[in-house]
Image (tube, rainbow, N blue to C red; front, side):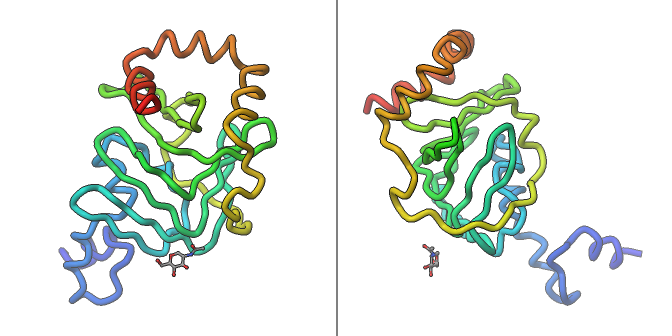
Length: 189
Ligand SMILES: *[C@@H]1O[C@H](CO)[C@@H](O)[C@H](O)[C@H]1NC(C)=O
């Protein structure tokens, strides 16, 4: 029987006639097709748009926090530019570090994969295991961040992270030169 099979593979399917809608990939499928892990975005996405240039907008049911090694905050609206292995011009995601929140400006992975993923928070690139982002996480509802709200400036970030992690980061950066060089170039320009 074909029909039950189709229905079971199309979670958004309401009417059999809407079977064509199955051809529209979910944002998670799109991340995967770009070599990025599906768990970069949490559960609870109400809709999204992406254009030919990779510019995307994702709308969540509500602003929320998801727990990884530390926490990631997602605003109701998240936008950025998707290309293979990388998201740039990101807005609407913040990472918690040392109890402070820092806007994530870009996310990337090595191609071919090194098993690591990188979060560009401006002054430093935070490196985490890719396996942490395999599946979309539950996300606890919180308010949207006001722009600038509890987000310290780059100097404070540099100082606080340098104090706690400079040795570790420095070591990691040396090992992962190709990707970090790409970021370094992006930061300089
Ligand atoms: C999110 O985007 C929608 C549609 O583009 C807009 O109406 C809404 O005001 C935005 N919400 C926030 C919190 O920026």
